[in-house]
Length: 108
Image (cartoon, rainbow, N blue to C red; front, side):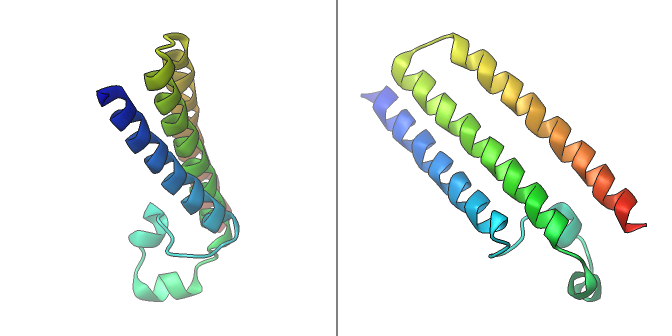
């Protein structure tokens, strides 16, 4: 019974991440991006938000996939999905860092 509850919570978090990703691909909603959050109010108004929306959309898409795979792993008890989650997590971190550097270089 506990596995089902954990899987449902993981699926709900995954659905929330997919929803956020969908909204960010459409460039709608509050932008959860460090560059945007740490910018001053004046910088936010003048900022080109498109690359930040795209970056956040891809990161939330990958996070949604991670939580979805974790939920499936909890239900099916497949050990190999753990490695898929690790690989996608690593790809997510690398993408976030590389894309942040590229966005900053493009800005200058």
